[in-house]
Length: 215
Image 1: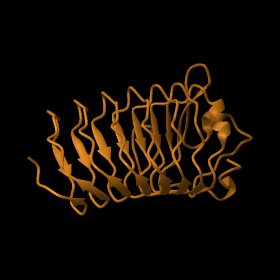
Image 2: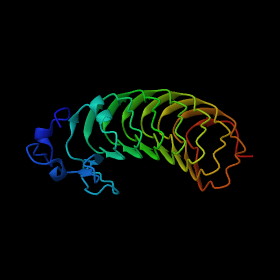
Image 3: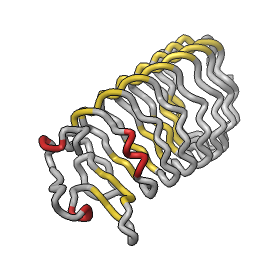
Image 4: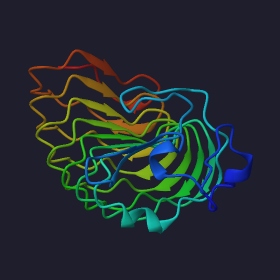
């Protein structure tokens, strides 16, 4: 609350009252925080583009919330870097449409299923994540550079790396569950792999420097 200028939030917390009355905070039966939803839409299964006017940085003290499963902070004005979260129960981390910068930590989040960092100012290379349960990796509309890792993410369904500054060749991904692959508007070159992606539904590669059509 203090780190993100809570006094000027759209929906504020009254910290003199019990935590279960705070806007966007959900507790489990033991009174531990399981969800923080400050994206402007209440309900820990929905996303919003409204935001809650959070301004400031993400505090590393979020690591104290060891029961946290969902963190929704999209469509705000958060800046600075992303902490290297150590949240063993986190399943969804949604930070899109902020002003975050710097590189992405190589998170130790073994239960993470959904990671959305779209529409920020993040840069550097993309880690070769060790996130065995990840299903959606959404990193489009940033400033990432370098090559695309040959991810070992067996449950990945959606991979959005579009609108960055990625270069080099496209890996011949071994992602058996991949359905959406968005790589357009980068600086990729070389030939397009003859992908063995049996569940692929959408593939976008336009506005790169690729030298051949799909075999």
